[in-house]
Structures are given as structure tokens and as C-alpha cells.
Image 1: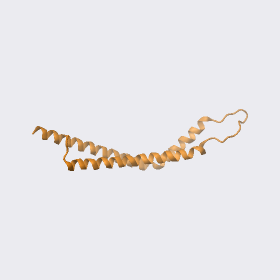
Image 2: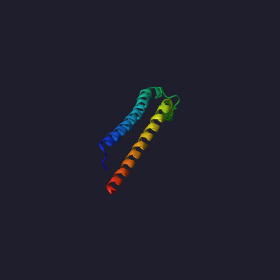
Image 3: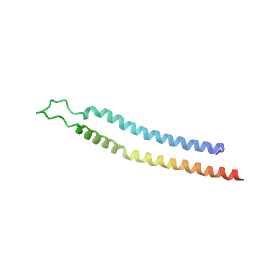
Length: 111
């Protein structure tokens, strides 16, 4: 499938816009990860002595971690959803563009 220069530029712009949206989505994910990494020391159990042979509950840390992660993700969820929808629309537009241009190329080859 060979495209005219203006169609290649248009496809290139569409693909660059999709890559930019993906970068924004990745950046939100990295920001959440960075904030969770900073919160981990505060989630760790206090270093206390065993009381009457009772060890600290290891699942308590995971519970606190998951709770904080859910809170941070919920805080950014509208932005994540918007970027995900935008990315899906862009991918559909690129696929339709390629499909239409592929049909046009097939028609020109048949003539």
C-alpha cells in the first residue's frame, strides 16, 4: 500500500497524536507508582517487640498498600478514563484510515 505524500503526512500526524496520548497515560501511571513508592515506608508496621509471642500480621501491610493504591487510582480515575477513551478513538481512526486507503490502493491496482 503506497500512499500519496499528503496522506502519509496525515497518517503520520494521527499516529503521533496517538503516541502522545499513550505517553500521557503512561505518565499518569508513573506518577501513581512514584507516589505509592514514597508512601511505602509509612505503610510498614512499626518495629515493636513481640507482645506475648504474637507476631505482626503480614497481610496488614498488603491491605494498607492496596487501600492506598485504590485511593490514589480513584483520585486520577476520571483522567485515566478520558485518556483511555481518547486513545481508543485514535486507534479506531487510524485503523479506518488505513482500511480506506488500502481499499483505494486495491481499486487503483485493479484499474
